[in-house]
Image (cartoon, rainbow, N blue to C red; front, side):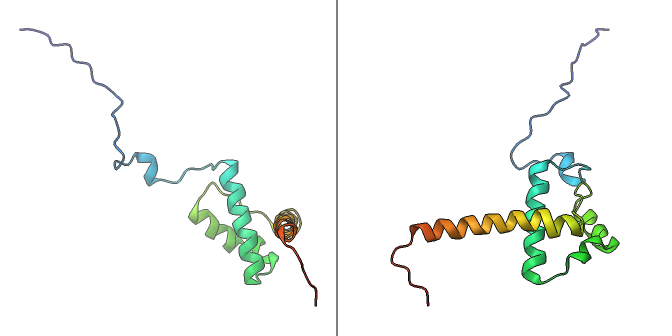
Length: 109
C-alpha cells in the first residue's frame, strides 16, 4: 500500500463575483474615514431636515445606527451642534467663496 502525500492549499483564489464570509456579517469597527463620512452625512441630514440635535441623544437613534453598522458610534448632540456643524459650515463657506472668486461683474440688489 502506498502513502500519498497530499497538500491542501488553504487559500482559494477568489474571483470578482465570488463573495467572502466577511460580506455577510457586520464588522465591529469601522475606519476613521468611513466614520467621518457618516458624521458629515448625519449633520447634513439633521440640518436639512430640521431635526433637533437632541434627537441624537435618543437611545432609539443609537439603536437605529447600530442596526445599520454596529461599529459606528454616532456623535452626541453637543458634538453635532458644535464640531460637526462648524466643520460643515466652513466647507460650505469655502465653496461659496470659491464660486464668488470666479464671478465677474456682480451686482447686489
